Amino acid sequence: MSGPDTATTVFQEAVARCSPRARCFPPPPGQPPAQDDWEAGAYRGAVDAVESKGANNQDSLEDVVFDDTNKNSVLDGNQRGLNGVEVSNGRKIATTDAKDRYELQAFGNMTVFVTQPRGYQVPVDENNVAQFFYNHLPEGSPQLTYGGIAPTGQLPQAVNFPLAASKLTQSPGQHCAIGADIQSCNQKEVEFARNGVFADLAARQDYAGCGALFIGDLVGDDLSVFTQTRELTSMLNGPAR
Image (cartoon, rainbow, N blue to C red):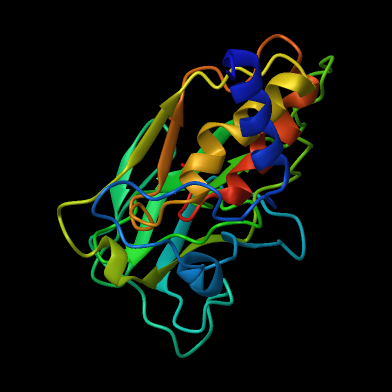
């Protein structure tokens, strides 16, 4: 008769045969089999930070939130802005005006970010991490054991936020996956996370709009495994926030 160790081994072998995006786990009751709809249509891009061509002594940002109709993450001349969208520098919140612009004070250590409005989606990177912010840290992080934010230099000429229209975020009712304290302490635990909760989420397709929100400690004291832990979000069928 098979014991717990045998069952565990069978499970591990089954997981090992799965590629990172394979559907190795059944969907929840009542959910249709997952498809690769998210991967095929994911809006991949970044914040449109326009580099200054010369010395930039401005002390504020007066820029645009726009409808990125061609999904290239660049404010093109024929694209309209979006008014009534909130942007913050961590101290103040501004709302884009009738000209679709926001204005915020700039300072040396700040993160500027947009609040995603209903019916739109911010872009995601290659690991499905939502790109809704710009870090402005001219000198970069202080010297740290595991590194930090690289120097960003002077303030960009503009920090424009691209958004793409999305039916997935139109409904006021959303399915969201919320995870806390992945807390990978070493590479072995990164693999536990890969073959556990991330494999489960890779088999589901019911959170593509809201995405997955991760809170708490992503890794333990050894920050060298942060990159590998972050890459697990590439398995998701929705944005990681």
